[in-house]
Figure: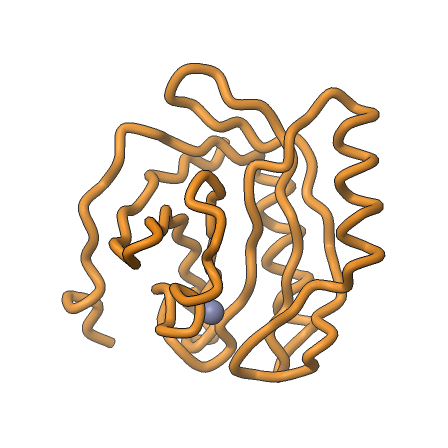
Length: 150
Ligand SMILES: [Zn+2]
């Protein structure tokens, strides 16, 4: 797979995710195949570091392999839980079972929160899951956040 057409400038903002959370996202999204899986990421932002402290696994009520909508009730519960734990919802994640890790045209259209982090996990290659994190401006300009798994 040639990813060169999906190169975006990096922002100064980095994302730190625990290995166990990364693995949980991977497991959840693999189990969701052939549908796209989705969820929210809670944590804290300090200067240019977004530290993910808790991942919320939500139901894709579209049950589609090409798009997703998060269950609104589960979304609300996640926001409440994050607040109770002193975290912010930093953004969301979803999987691309059959396409590369880059915001699709529809993803860009639906990325109405320009402060949120949009993580996309591509599972199109069985042995090579690709997790990337994006920032999408209202004008659909995409930049990328470096992800540090620790
Ligand atoms: Zn997508």
